[in-house]
Length: 303
Image (tube, rainbow, N blue to C red; front, side):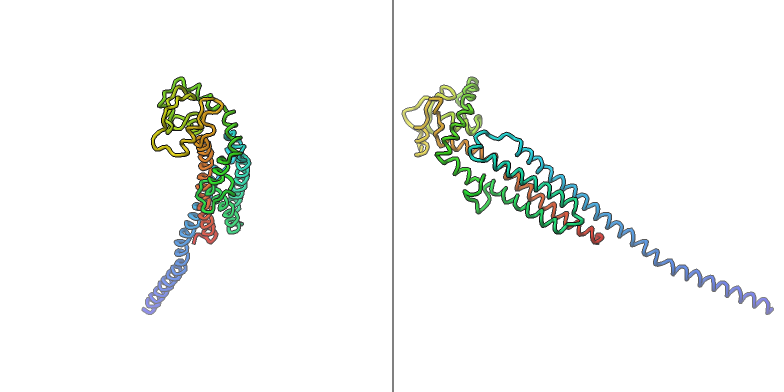
């Protein structure tokens, strides 16, 4: 009887020991289980940060490619020949060289963002703000625009309307034979085709008399005068009507309409360039700011 009691006691003790051991093992296993649940979350945040940084970096690089294309356009595109009289080709080359620096600095900062993220952002912002300022000046939206800003709307108008400059410009337009080309094309044109929609601004302003003069078209460069001018004509229009001659060496090259046509062609070209600079600088500023924020986030482990 005593032996059975001892056996039962031993079995109970062994069972209790097993139960205690199992409980201890379970307690030991709890921390690793919790850690395994948190580890994937940390890995996912880090991976997400890297994906976001990579995506923004690719976007920033793609945004810099149009800048490279504009450099090629500025340095190798043949502009309107008479622009050389206004020193615009020099401005064109200067802007092209400046954009080379913008393109290089933007991509250097892009590839070295992990090492120079704060300093790189500061440097690239300086160049992008200069690019934005130049673009605003070219589109005529810069409040402090003056005649000193080369290529701006005010500067162009002052240069074109200057009588000394215009004498050279009109000679250049004449030598380009634009009006002669219009005569060759006029064989298939009717009088109503000689409108601003059908002709270029220079052809409309220099090769035909102003509409207000109400002259009758014989051909592209020969128009019959009426005995009266159009009703409501102002002094400038009267001067343009008097300046017109059917002589192919004169036509309306001395008309304000001719100056306005040439100015419109030049301003449209530089306005488009200015608009491009404004849009690209704003997009690159936003892209580099986002890249800076994402890089800092990645550096701190996506927390």
